[in-house]
Length: 99
Image (cartoon, rainbow, N blue to C red; front, side):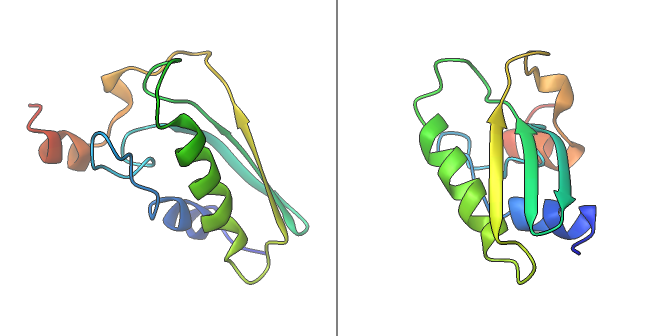
């Protein structure tokens, strides 16, 4: 089974097309866990009306399913707790010029 770090590394390949920062560093991933060949992800978007939402969800699913031991990725979109810039990593803040 993949480790949580390997799963998150796969998700780092997914870039928010509006902010040009990966979804892990943006703090959009709330939980990721592997159960056998299935990976379950709870994630959010920067806003409920994010136009890139379907694209981000599909790319997240594809990034995880490329891993050798992942047959299926199930993405659950949650809006609680709501996303805020406080969830971003220092790397994301640097990329966006937020200090």
